[in-house]
Length: 173
Ligand code: APR
Image 1: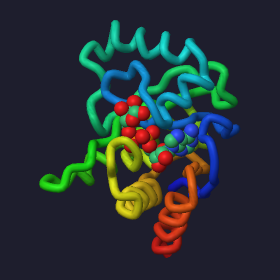
Image 2: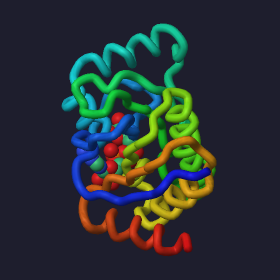
Image 3: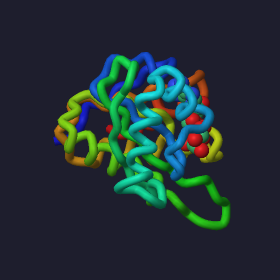
């Protein structure tokens, strides 16, 4: 069964869900955008857990398209699922890596028993992915991935992102 897809506007760190997906980088040690917001709002426990991963199972960091869970720290969400989206490139189609980031985030959500998951528009910020295409890949992948997650909530910053995801959801039927 697939997850019910919902859309919300605003700050992903405030969402009262089981898990929040972070648009991380491979280093897993923080950054700007969603990454910065999650570490700021979630507090040092998240970074400590990321450091532990780097010191043990992920010595070379988290590869693009993969996902890993940590504590949610002070967030309403119990868990953060860190995933690394691809940097947009004109000469190379990295769509499959972006789809993998969503698919792997759902797989990790199933592993930790998360039933409600908030997703940002991965790669559509600092990593430069055009919003309409990012929304198409995000919504299409989540809609097509069997998972025990009941709600996949895309949390969008601003009208451009929200409208792009609304169009992608409307195009599903
Ligand atoms: N809540 C929801 N959405 C947000 C928030 C927030 N608090 N902050 C930013 N966004 C939006 C951005 O406007 C964009 O649409 O999330 C989308 C993803 O943007 P980024 O966070 O820049 O993520 P990404 O494009 O995947 O770039 C990842 O940026 O922050 C660094 O460490 C991160 O190196 C990594 C890179």
